[in-house]
Image (tube, rainbow, N blue to C red; front, side):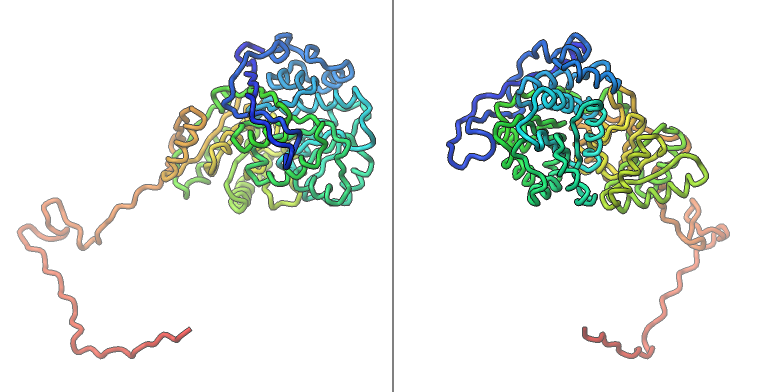
Length: 482
């Protein structure tokens, strides 16, 4: 890891002590975790100039699991978060998408749970995530890194039969990964008890707050033991995330791994100016020209996603390349099957809403196409982050209608980068403007004479409109009252 990749560690400044009456969360002494806090130099542990996992304080058992998983060198976020988490410190880690955040909290959990027997037969670690797909991904990462150990992980989320999840929770797994709504549902049923919890993780915290999970998250954290350790990982730290950390974390240490540029340097970002009626034709020509290894086409609505998917299917029905779509209205087993096929490379083009815009790690994605420009700037950042994973190269195209220039400007200001305009040779992305034409008998030559008139002849006077005098008035019509 180079010096430019070293994290910026920020120590929270002292905040006012709250009275013990009515205090929610963990203890009375809280610290301010505002992103504007002072930045201090990173420690040697966070810098990790050694370049491998042996310098992070992991045991031989965990290092064997890392080796089996094929991980050779830790990313900056892993090198910074893992040693502090193993030391028992509450950590607020800020890093852009695609930097290995999942392993940065999975490995400390495995390390801490294998070191001690625990407080009893119950859940020892809880991971909250915003989407079902991310819950499945985190569970798979646990199973991959925990291979050979006795630790068990269960994913709980909506869209799946709750009876099956209840049966799995009855076997007392050590780790539970879930969406806030389903976790709260199990807690209310008594099938998930957090009295023995030692460590809680909030992954993609900004996204969970964006989609309205804050009340559920607070209910869950209030029912967790105050002595727990908390890790909060987020791509951005807006005020709501900072407030959540202030209330429910204990003297958190902020590790900032985000660079000044929110967009990844290895991702080439371009845009097309296109009329809405020409979008699909442009999409066809773009896919034909680029021949992507794997591409995600982002749409704003579920209905629009279905329409684009159907039209692309008709276009590719005689080709091997697979096309699929995914959005929130699909059954969970369908969404699971689509994501599995996409990870295995059976699907070349995935049409999706922002349900896959956060946290989904598919290394084969080479192209991102924003068919609809995102409504929020942060959604653009996370959409584009689906490519260029772990230092790979990628390319992102955004379709911009003529009246959407303001939204494009906001995105460029957010990422502090100008998108380059692109065009396809021989293809007109804009409809030609209609020109007013006169009827043939009224068209005039350059000399002011009507076509067909002989020289020197004056044009015939137009016929007067027929008089309405003397014509019988038609019968009166009355509107029937409603």
